[in-house]
Image 1: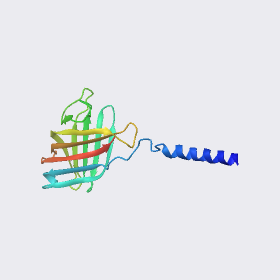
Image 2: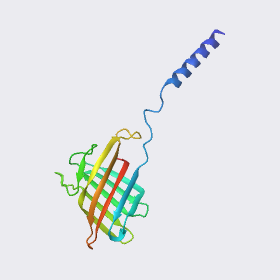
Image 3: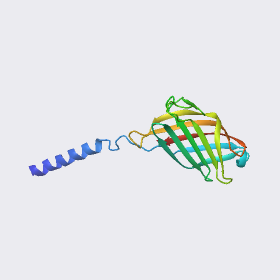
Image 4: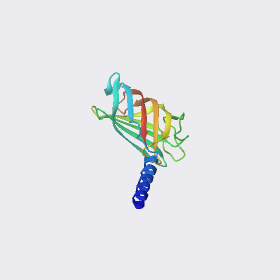
Length: 168
């Protein structure tokens, strides 16, 4: 009988200890990524709404590249050089050249009309850069932008909008 009591106490002790520990490693899930832009001019016409289809982010010693494909397969690539870093409140100016030669730039591709626009003016403001709860060393970056871009064919377009919770 004494052995049965000891086993019961041992079992309850293990159960209480295992249930009282937090078992999620402090992890969580990241909020969904968002992208929204309004493009005016060129083949996009007036007030074209570009919404996130999917994206990728690539961080390297050169900087951070955010590649967005919208719901209509148009492409927006945002190249952010290392100058000033990527902290909240940092403004990246189109055309800024880092010491390693990497340029802050935006390329917009109109897939329907097969025209590529290269930024000539504008800025990207980093509003937030926080830890990504899904990966130990990952980050989530959010910002807004106002861009003027031109194509070799001549038309000028403007694009303004924002991106939120892009993981890199």
